[in-house]
Amino acid sequence: MARPIANYHRFYASFNKLPKHGDDEGAKAAIVSQYTNGRTTHLHEMRAQEYKECCKALENMLGYGDQRKHWRSICLHLMQELGIDTKDWNRINEFCRHPRIMGKDFALITVSELEQLSVKLRAIKRKGGLKQQEGININHINLMFIENETEQTGTGAGGYKAGQLPS
Image (cartoon, one colour):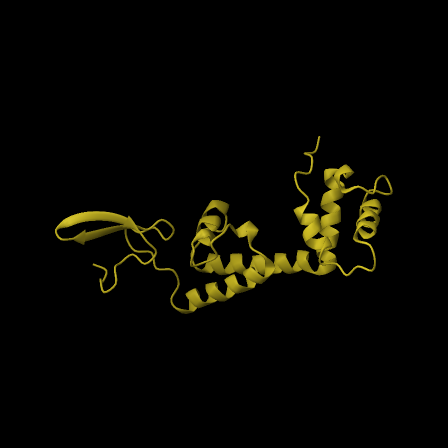
């Protein structure tokens, strides 16, 4: 049996962008009725498959389905060119979660943010790509600072303090 629909964000995100004439409730009821073959006009009574088909159709009507797929494909291709393993979704999400990249998981990135991400990825590629130094992971950078003859360990994005050169 299919899982019940947990929330209706996907539907309302598309529905609220549709040009509507008249009552929102009436428009929503008409859409729901169309995708349930007249069985119901209530969103919460839709079956999971009906809901999925309805949302996909709304997204395609707005140009989001194809547009989102297009930009995701571009970004994944650019990540692959930068040496990121695009077969591993955890790796992709870790990369995208970095505050200088997007600050959130890849699946949560909107179409406009995907466009911005592609610009960032092209800039990284143009400037020589991602530099992975020995002992430093691109996502989880473990730094070793030596101050006043004592060792301190920290985490940061740059890898070095201001004015400090890599050894």
